[in-house]
Length: 69
Image (cartoon, rainbow, N blue to C red; front, side, top):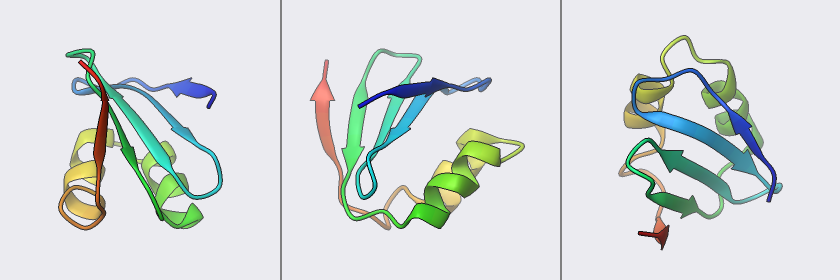
């Protein structure tokens, strides 16, 4: 999955393959979140604060799987 770098104090990059959202954090940890709607990915991509958007709209609302570290 290709990743898009973002300017954030918490998140390094995000990716999306049409259903799975991948989030890479500055810690090096990478998480996949399956079944994320496209509009949620677009919202995260364009958010003024990627970390705040992630906590408000993704974390705890979608399942996740750690894939790195």
